[in-house]
Amino acid sequence: MGTVRGTVMVGMVMAAVLLMTGCAREVDDPAPAASRATPTRTPTPTPTPTPTATTPPIARALPDTVDAGTVADGVSASASATGPSNVAFHTEGQFAVVIELDCSACTGTATVTAPGRMSPFGRATAPLTGSFLTAVLRDDAPDQTVIVDAQGPWSVTMRSWNDLPTVSGAQSGTGPAVLFFQDDVSHLAVDFRPASAEDSFNGRAFTTSDDTQVFGDSGAFAKQFDVDLPGVLAIQTNGTWTVTPVP
Figure 1 (cartoon, rainbow, N blue to C red):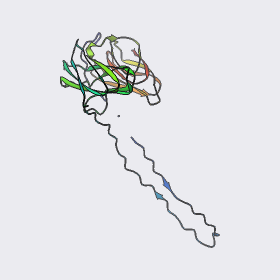
Figure 2: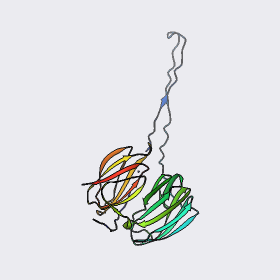
Figure 3: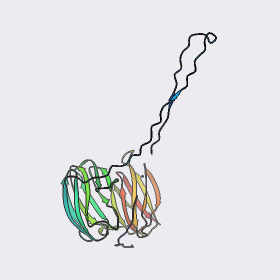
Figure 4: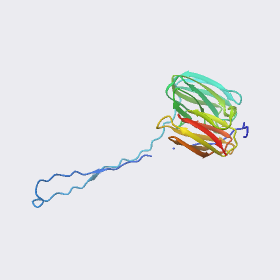
């Protein structure tokens, strides 16, 4: 890509431990050992439950829908609503759509997903403003729908990832973001500080090598990952981060 304006294609990409215990009861016997025998008791093992796999729920379309219009290279679309709603839009061209969500007056957790998905494009604690990247598929239909599950008033702007402003060097922020790096390097250094004990950093990089890289970790960390830039980086977290391209 260099000062890249190309389409980057790809694909993307998650146990329970059971403890078995047994118990036996000892019986006090006041009689001398020589006068009567002590019966032997065999402990009865606790039945082991059968493990059950947990499947993430499939997102289903909501009753309310707002129409954002058409998204194309050089053309963005927008919509707004209060509370959970579908957002319908039409695309002209082959590209992933960046959803810029303004949920600064929201409460709770805001989730951006699509009907039929088990894992969302992203979610973050409100209030927030952040960007999310939709699926990156060659055969996406022109007419698409995403779901914004949020409590309170919100607005979205949707644009082609080809229209993202390119950035270079160290970039810092808090919460979800989508960045278009123009640096021609093979690694990315990440310095991450979580917003809570449950928070983690997840990065997806879509690059000129047509090889999606998924990386990250939980808890505070400073690490370097193999990431073949230039390309688009989608960050999912609630925490504070600095990402720096390095050779």
